[in-house]
Image (spheres, rainbow, N blue to C red):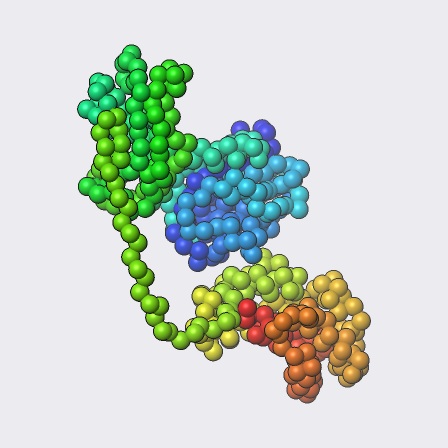
Length: 460
């Protein structure tokens, strides 16, 4: 059916278990193995990945399209994610009803798809690339959903919805009178109460019934948070009720924390006023806060975490994070990179991981003639070491490095002259090298890595 239209959409409600899963863990795969797919929707850290096999990609659907690293669109919570493909625009990714900016370089045709492949959820068909998380819904469309349709489906939400009826007949003097909420399980930890209304299951009319200060209770006590209706003050009357044979009390929704689980949690309502019955509620006075603890003042600076380091190095060098040499290095060292942004937690072993990643990015930069020509337009990479690293030649290499990776005019930054002195000293050391790795480009890689992997990049 997809081949007949040449386009498709994968729509899913998912809750990733964490943001540390890498190597494109498979959420949904139409696959014949780890290296051949018709399509894949996967996760790499904070990114959603989209693979699609077409006349413009290889048998694995690479190169992949991913959500921007810096945006961190993927989070460990319930999310609506849509991957679309059409022959003109290729792949796009939407998260929670909004486009992520992840765009393809072109579409192509699906003529190379293999109908012997299998659909797998949570892993590859060979059980590799396992994904940890919860899948609440998957829909595969043989057409591209429009942005408006995606937003509409996100707004609808996911999961079964129930009308939860609370009988209030004894308080309003009308048989079969109810206050009703539309209730659904919001995520793994909470319920969504939405759009409450008053209804009589019969032909009676309400007359005039005041209702004020509604609160939701769970398992014998009022919920400590989520009381969006405690300021409700309405009068149920015949005119408003007659229109729909019910009267909406509020357009608000609220989230109530799950306690025992769907099968055993019990709910009730309390009212400050319902009909002629009143229950005066006095909000407790907030406790006087204790004097703040006298703790040492925290640092004014922090450090980038592993994902931010990877995204920053990519932005500074112009080398995509999906470059094979960079991607493999990051996969090997990301566990050694900082997880938190507290500068006090930084360890010397983490600097080694930063250095290895910086070397990988700088190697990819210097080996790409187009990228290095853009960043170092006047440096002669084809000259000998002695001819290239004259005083003017060093300036042609070091000055762009500092301008790109250290910056200027920033309130707190390394002294430019000091940085230049250190890089010159490193070039002096590297210029005395010997062997196959000793070259003008090789020395430039070392100089680049020393600046890219420095505190100028790491500290924020």
